[in-house]
Length: 591
Image: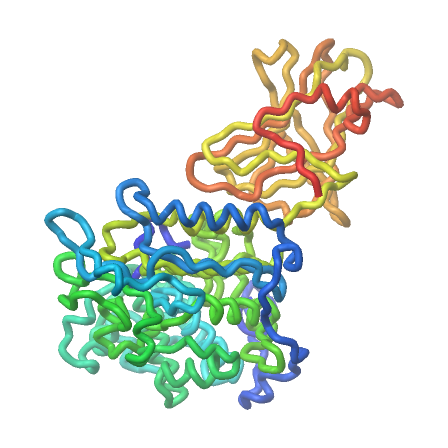
């Protein structure tokens, strides 16, 4: 099912080389073993449980992550966002947080007249456990995408080949120019969804996909669509001669030891599976009653539970193994499922023509609406309609799994993605930013809908050229959240921006003529210099302003100094000067 978040879901080929504005594709070995070599696996376990410190994380934000998540078990604002969840966060090879909260099975039905859930008797309710299995919904798309990239490695499909090359009937209704890449990046032109479950047979469902006309020409717009991954499933099954569930088992879950990941879990798993929805018309397309142990998505259900867009069941640990494998370049221990170059493609934005809808091969990129402050141009992930999410941040080598049963007992009880954002913000906060100089630095905080200021005392810059210097670190939601260097010559009545330059290590100086910084700066310290206006009582400050929706990791300032010639008008290293800084919303943070 297309994820209903209310917000748009936001080197082509291995060894691609730019040729006159086009792209040439390196040939790939057809043999799977050759495609997987050379392996850089070291035989070590992919993951282990450990402390926050062992993971290189701060324990405080991880504790807050759990506290924040538990708040969504309560009305938020009217109903709980989920009945329960399993939270997992880690960095490197260490899982520092693996916490179940709430209930995996709580409601036996939904009462439409009273808008309440009808609970099972207490003895029949099932608490969440670390190994509770969830219907992943659209997170399933990542598995289909990985399987497709494997076949690209092996030369069985080509990224830029028309889908009709493999499925001639797919070319009907103007789809002859849709490529494999269009399917993987949701730029095919397919509309979001059609009710395949109304077709009586499997063959007729497939024919509806083939007969479907496009909403627009391929490659001209981003439009998230389940039909893309259903089509990709048909391609994979055609070129391999294997069903998608067999491909999943043989190419991903068995090599990686993901023993609790599969389509159509057996009945014996049911007590360990989180229930989903009391599925009835009109909110559901099918009358099924409580869905528990079967796929929630109506189209996937009608396709026998095996579909390219939905249907995979898994638990948090297995998803963490997958995350670690991808962060390690496609290898887990001595098993390789992808080449490093392929993983790079999955984390590379193909949708540069559609800002805000960044997308690699299968993975969404840089989406603050559920990645929160973990979002960077290379942060990859996906969400699922049932309340699931997986986020990988190669920049900090960290990963987050949030598995919730947010359609239990009914899909209308939840909206937006606040629990995912809250969890991602806290994991991002748990990755420490070491001060540029000494043991402390000024931190702007990560509050939304806020303004934080850090002001120097009034200085006399009226004679000679006075220059401000400091170390600066920033990562904000692009354009929405802005860090401004500004000055006032009238005691703070009016403020004017102060242009500055910032140089990252080993880089060239970048001018900021408007005195502002926003977006992604590489999460490294920059050396900043700014020439200050001449005034007898000049006040200089940093102002960090955020909107009400999402935030980045924030801003840090360290080593503030104002110098006129050889004379230092202000030096934060001097305790007397540091005491004169006025901070509102900023705090002093230790390493």
